[in-house]
Image 1 (cartoon, one colour):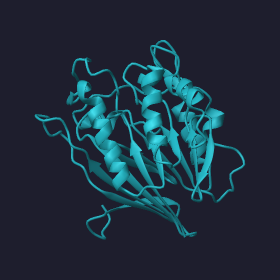
Image 2 (cartoon, helix red, strand yellow; image 1 turned 90 degrees about the vertical axis):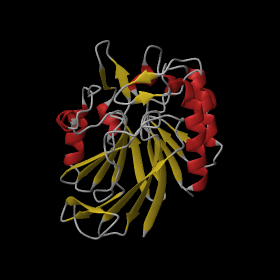
Image 3 (cartoon, one colour; image 1 turned 120 degrees about the horizontal axis):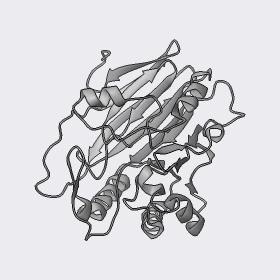
Image 4 (spheres, one colour; image 1 turned 135 degrees about the vertical axis):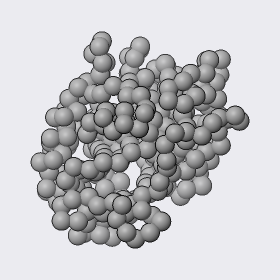
Length: 287
């Protein structure tokens, strides 16, 4: 049985300490962004992970030197690092993630376009580009790699959700930060696959899960905003099916930070008869 344990960080919004605090659905302690990053590094060190995933908005202002500093910290763990850019990483400057990857040239670091096998699981990343009025998939064809065995699961990393979650997040009384042009085409390519696919994304600053047949999409909570968390995702492939477990590890937040307005639940997902089924990690019944 193949097994893989991931540390997943998204929406860290790293920036200079003199940056004023912001607000989205909750306070954004931007002056403390590197303190939160240090706390996330401690979670990774304590979690015995096999690989590290960054789901974008690593930076707040797309500075390549900030991105280099963050990525260098992660490659120091000696584990594969797979990263995709978020909207804050590609504007107002050239894609900071791509520039940092070229600067580091580290063999453990993969940025789009890539197809990387880690412990028997295949990963790919969704590249994005700014359009002037929003963001689009930069190359939909490279997001779902050709040549994968028909029964091989695919783990697709994306900053933006690919299955639209606008209505769901607005129903929670939360703000929707905008979608990604071309996401529908990537999702359609995933739906056509015979094997299960898992999309891991950030952007919404909200822990979320939804499924569409063999496609499971997991939204990860932010580091910069409540709950100030790192997600630890464990994947098991025992041949007949795929099993995913997600646990949320909150880091020490700045003093005075208020609790958020949505719940956090550790969860488990398995594929049964071509469909993803959810069960709470607190019990055996479906939820």
